[in-house]
Image 1 (cartoon, rainbow, N blue to C red):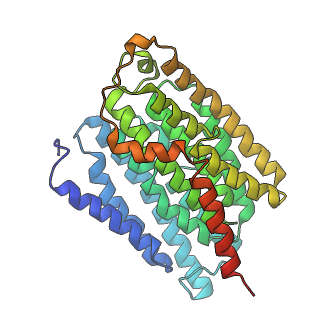
Image 2 (image 1 turned 180 degrees about the vertical axis):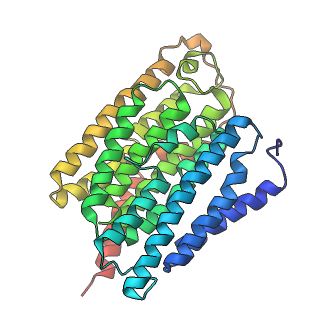
Amino acid sequence: MNNKFFPSNFLFIMIMFMGTMLSLSSSHWVTMWMGLELNLMGFLPLMNIKGKMLEAEASMKYFIIQSMSSSLLIMSTIIMYNMNLSWYSMFNNNMISNMILLSLILKLGGAPLHFWLPSIAKQMPWMILFLMLTWQKLAPLVMISLTNSNLSLILLMSILSTLIGSIMMLNQTNIQLIMAYSSISHLGWMLSMISINSTLSLIYFTNYVIISIPLIMILSMSVGNHLFMLTNMNKMNNLIIISLILSLAGLPPLLGFMSKLIILISLIKMKMIMLTMFLFLGTLISLFTYLNMSLMLMIKSYMTFEKNMNQYTYMPLISMNMLSSFIIYPLIILITKYAMTILYKP
């Protein structure tokens, strides 16, 4: 399957899409597990899209890890059924809910079970890496929001993911590895609110996807896989890519800052000060790497800029990223405020 426009690729994408939809639309643990397996069977052939040996190795690692987590998940649900005679979310036993949570964290690549994600990320094409860092996280995140009986373990995973993802970014020279560790760090922010207010985690996830789409597309078309290539002459608009990188870092007034601010305000209101401090510390550590990438793009002389690249495809997403302070964030606040007022009106 050397041709990336191979006709069966559409079939595999549809299988992957339907698997995730099956997991999201079900409240039955066995059906959710079936959706995850269907999603895996659709994603594995896409990982071998260019037919290279490194991609085959990465897809084999991914298959083994996902099979391990799926096996742990189905075993835990069978034990839960034997204890409760129900396939639905009835977590009377803390050990069972912990096993289900660990299997889903392994699927997501969250710390401390993140060891497989970086070794696979650096061997993938950019588009497949984007799918693995975004779409593949959607179903496990929703499933974690159903396991609400072990908040302390979820918050511990959140802190570890944010800190380990940020610290491991510091040493990297491969841009794909930086994006992988950045995804682990952002996953920590999503996990911090997943059991308390899953809507905020979904908003954060959506904003992360909106920032990642144009950033990964521009990087895949203009830059190689290594950090020093950012200083080479290329055809990308540097100001746009700098704004996307800083948005991923969470600097105001960009979209990434707005999504982090919503979570920070919610955690402070719930008096979770230590969790807020750890999340903030992880963001400060990762900011060093993002600012380093931005500086490498900024220190080039003006004569090396070539702004003739066609970026009109991503301009709506880029505009959304730039104007979030004045348009998106006020809209989110208004919608959540009035929705809560209407729904919880006595």
